[in-house]
Amino acid sequence: MRHITTNDTPTPTIRGIADHSWQERGLCRGLPAKEIDELFFHAARNRAAIDAAKTICGQCPVKKACFDYALDNEIRQGMWGGLTEDERRPWHAKVNKRLDYSRVKAAFEGRDIHLSDAEREAVTRHAYVRGWSPERLAYALRLDLDWARDLMRNAAHAVADRDHYWDQADETKPADDETADDEDIASPVQVPRQVQTDSLIAALRKAA
Image (tube, rainbow, N blue to C red):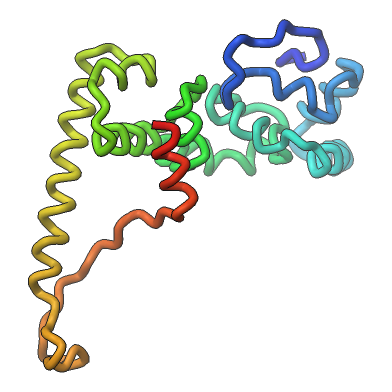
């Protein structure tokens, strides 16, 4: 058996998205090791085993946590989160570009999160806007202080560039008495800001 899911393990002190406590609620927990190997670490073309494993995963309450665990720990073999290794391959290829705001929020709350590059950048930008110090960011993300200072410096430049761009974009808007649909008027191509719901913004502010 490649990864233990049936043995009892102590409950971690930090109950975050990256801990192992979710395994206690997995539907595969308690299955014999031989059956787990046959179903979740099946031969590539064993459709019967794949279908049986997908049936279990489809009803599992921790399917997403299982999927995240495989991505965070670069586990490429076997069935995780209801997906075979072939089905997960595209996700592994772009894992460092993943941007899940539930994970960003969890990081602000002090949970143990294995962040992607994009998620770490989002945390840093929100921390900069909230007025965090590099020391606080280093503690929250378990980073070296010099690295945290570099991230904060990059965030400051990114926010300044964004604000400068939108100030310029506002200046190019036509007046109320001008025809906004005139095809001869050249309008800049605006890059939309990241879509954030009011509830998400409120949650990030509360966490910060």
